Image (cartoon, helix red, strand yellow):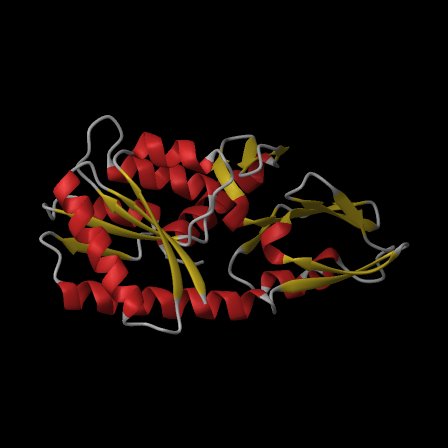
Length: 250
């Protein structure tokens, strides 16, 4: 299994110590192949992401100048809601804030080797399980052009229009199903069985994991697109979205 680690800490000695621990961890886990990228600031890490680099696990110092670890974590979550974030810090005062970005774990420095390795093992187990589940998380859709399997993580929302449902995807494309024979709710029931999907009003089913912001009249998605939502749908959608993010669903 290949994993890409991003380590971000503004202290040179801490960076070297933590990088050495990561290398030791990978050496003791022959079933893993790892790539470790080290960054001295959140800005440098974000600049790297602009080049389409993808990381599976982020190990972030919290107390850093300019962009602290919590702010950095929020930015990372805005780009990738499936990554795992482990916070490393000298202070426990940010523990509550770490839940805002659904951090996998919060470790106090100096980092204990055995504790770090145990946390990394649990992180790897979670990622392995997510990869396995991902192959099952698809929605079968029949269109006039044929049969499609829509991955959940590519579906932004479904919209009922007259007697058909249009599905909006993260690459800005759409697919439209055949004319409905039953209700909208029964048609999207397989989506609603997953905790990341939520009804909004009578005509929309939204993927909570793809939502970047919920406003009074609009929803902003991770890919930059937006959707005008029913006025009555704002409060229940905002509640469901906050519960999803704070509840640690992935």
